[in-house]
Image (cartoon, rainbow, N blue to C red):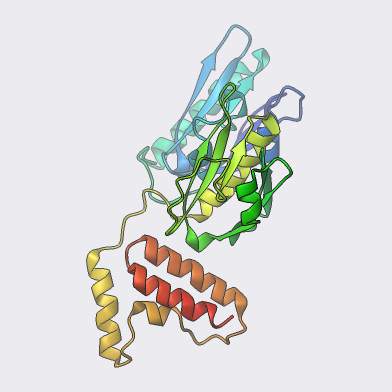
Length: 308
């Protein structure tokens, strides 16, 4: 067991898991405290280093590309002080920090953990539900959908559109542009089939950001939770033969149904809403991966919606 403790937080490594607990000191960034304890499996680690300084030093943990949805969502958009994978080391802890680095590096060698990118998330995102406040409204994510609600500062176009509910199966991505200087930022939720090209303050799928610290903190957590539940950006696309195989299977069974029609049906009772919601998410994944055409996706979605 290797452990480094200090006012900035505690890092513990047991040979398989690295646990990061942020400190409660006033100097610890609020985003790290809101994120809470982070558990990093050894297979997600690409490297670790200790950087000595005039007053103590700093531990840095480097994760494999694509391993953590939080880093995927927040990279380049939060300050170094908010990075959970950095730890300020006090002067009397430098020897312990160097020992910690040696222990992690030895384990990486023994377990032959590569530092190559991964095609699936090796760590979970934050727990849901989560609500993030922005300049002209709030976003709430419950694990199944994102709900946008407006406040009194919203432009009339958005106010007329009313609150927005975006199912996870309809979401194709999220664009986060932080506020910079006097320029507002925004969060834009990209919805399948949407052709919105409006400015952020008019787009009903968009929240305007003013750049406040609390705003950045809540947005980072919500988008990390959302990113963890969306398809991994490096996940391999299904082979073209997969779609042909699904169609061939339908023909062989004599049902005359394509993959979309089968996806919209099941042996569950029509009033099993959890099952129907899960099937909608699965449909969205098949559509994004190219297994279902636009027409097949629309047909299957309508078949499911009729069963609610």
